Each structure stands twice: as structure tokens, then as C-alpha cells.
Image (cartoon, rainbow, N blue to C red; front, side, top):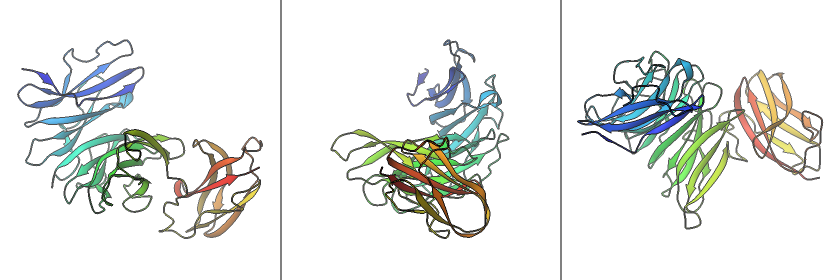
Length: 353
């Protein structure tokens, strides 16, 4: 008997979609299909088998990779503990890695609910819930040959006390990833987030920055990327005794990622500003430095400086105009400081005309 699990996930590509699901013949396997923009099935009419290993495979996730191949991830029960596995299929629906996929980690404990994002080089960055302690978030980067780039155990994203689970991951546009998850380190459910560099290093506060710790529980976080290495997290929120949807830009306003590990904070004066203001910052070393202004929607409106600067303190003026020379309306804006393409800090400032 063949039955299909409702846990399949899909991803769009060039007007069509890739769909993955769990399908039971003897046990549950991962099956996938490529559908074009007209609804025609481009692979076998019954789908192609991504993983038919012994044991059950659930919670399949698809990530379109264009002509270079499409990635799939799933929760795998072929050994004693659950593992997170990936496979890459070519345009004809044939696997390009080891048959039945490769494990993302060492399998020391249950690894569940893998999520995928592109690394910008044909490979993927995956994040999952890892039970090697009390429930943490781990991540792994895999290249097109199936090589694990962050070590066989994966890299820890969050190992704070309490349970962390259900990671969501998105590309940061610079070879790294944005990760958001449910976090119970304070008892109730909160939402935390982290940015990972291409080498797996944490670029924000160790164990993540708070995205929302409002009263009540927050859960089911989903992160998507937007330009300039920033992101938006959406979650289900119970602060009003019901299930509502909330969203937040990350880094969250009025936070300064990496400030505790570098030198100096990003600040402006006057703030609020009636017009022109001065923005001050300190660099831990010399490098190509960019200071940019974004509006409340996350749209870049002004590059204040883009130059190679020495280490130490700096102050630059912003005349409260955009790159086209137009005066900016009053409201909330964000200054972002980066060195050599790496975000150091963000700062909230307000214009009042």
C-alpha cells in the first residue's frame, strides 16, 4: 500500500516548483517531483525517490538550485537516532551525491527538522534541532560534491540553557545565513536569531540575539532574507491571548551585533535629529568600511561613507538627504556599519523636521 505523508514542502523555480514528500511503501521514503509553470510533471509520473534507505524518512524540504541541481533535506531514521540528511538531484531527477543522501552531522543524538538555504555557490547551509544536550540549534554547510565544510559535527548556532528548536534558515546574500528559532532559555517561548558567516562563525551575539521576548509564547519562526544582509522574521505570537502574526527586521532595532566583541559602539548626535546629524563609530582594525542608512522598511537610501579607514574612532556627518540629494522625511532610520563586508553594528536614529 502506498500512502503519502502531508509533511512535504515545495520551492518555486522559473515558474514551476519542486515538491518533496514522505511516501509509504514498506516504510516511509522521500519522493520528489518537478512541476513546470503549466502544471506538467517533468519527472516520473509517480515522482522520483530521493531516499529509499531503511527506516522512515520524514519532514522533507526542497530548495531549488536552478540548472545546477536541486537540494532536498529530511529527517532520517535509518539508524538508532534520527539524523538530518541531504541529497542533490540534477535536472533529470537523478541523485548527484551518495545514494540515499549524506548525513549533516555525526549522529550523536536525534537531529530533526532540517531547513535549507543557498550558500550562493551551488551548495547549501542547513540548520536543525540537535538533541546532543537539552535541545540546541546546529548548522552545516555542504558543497556541490557533498563535502561537509563546517566539520562532521556541524557548528553550534545556539547552545543556551533550555530548549531551542525548529530552526528556519535563509541566505544572507554574502555566503552566510540568517537563522531564527524558538527559544525557551527564559522558560516561555521566545524568538531568537543569528547570522552565520561563510565559515560558520557567529556574527552576532553568541547564542543569538532576541528577536521577540514579548509576554506569552512566540513560536513557529520563519526567516527570509532581504538586500544588504538583513532579514525579516515572522512568527506566531500569543501576547494578546490569541494566535497572531508578528514580524521583525533583523538585526533588531537598537541592537549592535558584535559590539561586545569589537571596540566602540555606533551612535549619532543629536538623536532625534532636526536635520543633519553626526554618526560616530570605532573600528577594531583597518579595512574597507561602509556606513549606510536604511529606512524603516529596510531599503537602503544613502551610503554615507565607503572607504578604507584605519582602526580607531571616526565621526562622519549625514545631512539627512538620500543618495539623490532629496531631503529625507521625518521618521525612524537605521545606520549600518560594515567592515570588509562584515556587519559590525546597527543603530536606530530618528529625524524630526
